[in-house]
Image 1 (tube, rainbow, N blue to C red):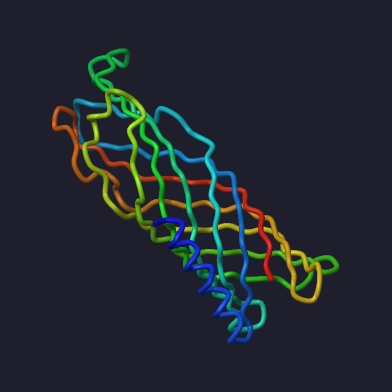
Image 2: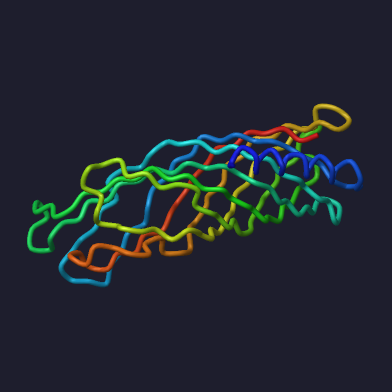
Length: 215
C-alpha cells in the first residue's frame, strides 16, 4: 500500500509539471538523526531519551515559483524514526523502573516556503526553507521485550521545519542541491500509557542532511 501511494504521488507530480508552467519536480534522499524530547509534570518518574539513531528519508516534491526567487514546495516523504525511553524513579537515578524502544515509519506531507538568493557564485544560489510537515504514522514496532510503558501512539504528528542549503544549475532544466533541515515535532505522540508511570510527553525531533535533483 505504501509503495502504491508513493508511486501514485510521483505520477501526479509528473502530470502537474507537464501541464503547468513554473513547476519543477524533484527527488531527494537524506540520512537523518532522530531523537525524542521527553518531559513530565509528575514527581515520581524521570524520563531519559535512551538513544539517538541514524535513519533515512526519501521523498519526491514539486516546487512552484509564484514570484522570482520565491517558491512553494509540496511533496511526500517516507521517513523512519527509532527511539528509546528509560524511566527512573525520582528516589534514585540508578533505580530503572522501565525501558522501551520502538521503530516507527511515517509518511510526511511537507508544505514549505523556499526563498532563494541571487547567484552567489556562477550558477549557484543559497536557499532557505520553512513551513509545516504533517505526518501520518505508518507503523510502530516495539524493539524491546519490555515496551509496555507506551501502549498506544497517536496516528499523526505535525512538525515545524526550517533549513537551508545550496542549489546549482547543471543544465537548462536540471538542478542539484544539498542542504540541512530540522523538524521539530509539535504533538505529544503518547496516546495511551501504562499508568504505573507519571504522565509522559514525547515529541519527535529529526535532523537531516539532504541531497536531491530537480528537473
